[in-house]
Image (cartoon, rainbow, N blue to C red; front, top):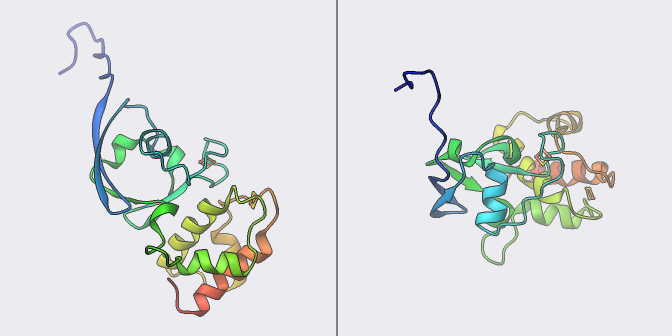
Length: 168
Ligand code: FES
Ligand code: FES
């Protein structure tokens, strides 16, 4: 209901948001302006997801929401209420690495590792999308994930390896 004088009511200081994160349903009390990235890192201690630019430009914060890749710095946690979020911590099955994690290790697809969780989550989204057929497609569809160490050739090799194995 609009205020009779035209003033918007102040936002609540915290709001409840329920997320299923790596298979576990969790309800958080967050300020309405909390990004999904900050909710994961600061409220759930899931620090595998990295904050690079905080402006949607580097891809370090990529996670999967209902299976689709997303820059978690660009969305508010409350906008994802009720959804399933998968972070790098949720990709492995127990002690068994996700095929992409294994391929990144085998192909030496990282140097400092800062971009790597985002690269791997983004690659998981790319494989699920099923659009990449060639190395050029991989490069194009991974172009939102920057690597300051320049590990791009081996990142492409790792993704191609998993595509060749029939995806993940
Ligand atoms: S931290 Fe989200 S895109 Fe850079
Ligand atoms: S491995 Fe260092 S930024 Fe990509």
